[in-house]
Image (cartoon, rainbow, N blue to C red):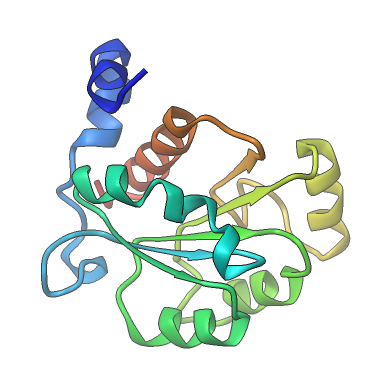
Length: 161
């Protein structure tokens, strides 16, 4: 199914949450497009990079990195509407984000190959709670429409879409 057919098959609520891009101005770069930062395990394996054309067509700007320290620097210095992070070995970063006053309100979508129950347990052991400290969890592999639905829902819930 191509992107246009997928848009036509979405419900009104899904279309509204993923297509409406009137985001909080404080989370938009000067170009006006909501910025998504993706932190993946390997730079050449970024799943979001695969979806870059669709994300850009939908009005988003995508930044990707595989370096946690670079991601933290970006989060502290640039307006980011959504942080998409691969869970593996990143608990320290997620705890830091929730402890840092400038980042507490950051929208965070976790993606991982772990089952949702396994990820919830790992998060709990790190002192984090899904849907209290993080905005969503998406298990790999996932379909593009699942990613777009999650992005739209999270940003709408946070009043950024």
